[in-house]
Length: 335
Image (tube, rainbow, N blue to C red; front, side, top):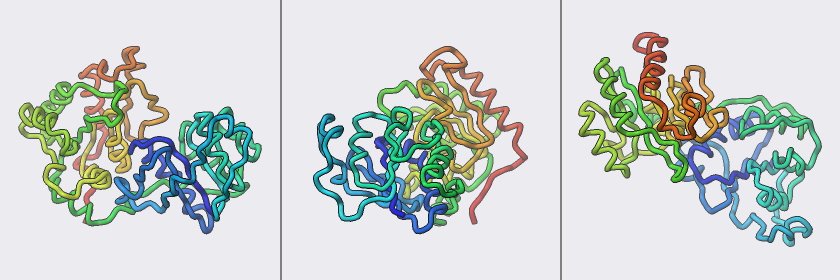
């Protein structure tokens, strides 16, 4: 079965949320051939996310019909690609994009836009916010087949990255921090000075703070290094930097504190205890689906859309609670 997934976001975190969906379709549908298409010419699955080794191909950008809104509604597509799809899954909710993607030749079309109005087959579909479990259930109803949900396993990551993670973080008692956001406009950040205060408290309690920051954020790194001399910046000491390396390094942490960002999703795949800070975004939609997690939402805690309004002591208390509930010396290592 040839399936096309359309996602209109170029951000790493948004695409990492598709891992469980991709893995479930690949493993649950016989002879599944997955393709990916974005709203612009980016290819994260063959680029930044390549080391996660997901089985999915990049569809050519030319597959997107170029029409006005009116044309999308009343006209048929002029040329049919040589290999039509059996199923197109539209993960966006924009009306214009939906009408555009709806023109791609396919036997079945799935989209949640306007209450699933544009789906090619009627079904009692469940509303979702790009929740892979719910989407898989809806696809089951549309195709009338069984598709077991199979979460992505980090065992797919090459052992070379596990060995590099062990070289970079050879000891125990590490606490991780993800402090930078990729989205340029939303107020998802938490003050670097607050992170510094938490990190120094971590040092006082016998742990080593690990800041998972790309080399390009040198100004922030310099500031943290000055204020937290015991902090570790592993990405400065490797030429193998990539999201999958962050995930393998996360397995060597006892816990992590993160804002809502791409690195949060990289850490979340390791399923370690996490404190995650949310502001304008919805934790029900974006938070990692792991057992040991403390979600601190500024909208709930302080009636604010700005994550920076979350008090420092609440974050520290949440981290301490996670730490207390862990077995002693719980650190997974790769051989």
